[in-house]
Image (cartoon, rainbow, N blue to C red; front, side):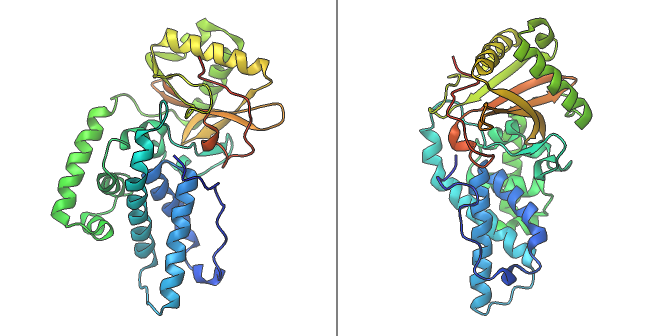
Length: 319
């Protein structure tokens, strides 16, 4: 959950020239920070803090031979510190916790849409990472997602190589136990078409069409954070999920809220906007084997501000 500052709230670095040669690393650094925190705002803050640290080090006369290594280490360690302080807030979170959504237009491209990162920044994957300790999460992300060797992982995290190997093996076993074995994610065009049919069927109340798009054991997750209507526990099963979706989108339509297709955390989905163009909710569809395997709906207003002005209409997933 976000640390309370809106995304992009920090002042720019005092001397932009201090960032010379580092701009190309921003997507990687953001991806690491977001994978660690599950928060867009916190990830941007962490990346900015890393650059501020770089500025201070240079002004103090420190010679930094490898900018990428320096910044990656800074972002990872800041992420570990953030998770340690955030753990208490997560334990008292109201309802189902989901990451802040990373959204790009249906025809756009962002960090989560890069083929090598799409699966590892999905909401389902990030929720699984919540079960790891901060250091386990860092080691697993660096090794599994970003392909760092154990020598580099050890240097970045301040652990020994032997310890990193043990941490990674333990984390991978834990994550594998929670992962659902199935076919690969949908291709972009096929995912967009399925999402279009999904939202048309749900908004139109066409239960038969909607059920045909859902896996029998589909699970609907809703994150309202105690500030927007949300389901208390994930809704499992296609019939139950379909009924809740139809009811939620019917209520949304009466309030003038309509979905607009988008890519959410590298998955097909939609942003729901009210009549004034404000964000009311974001929905991600976990699509594989030609059907929707899981649905993640974020209506917590604290997690939507980085996308645009937030609606005051309570929405999807409510009961």
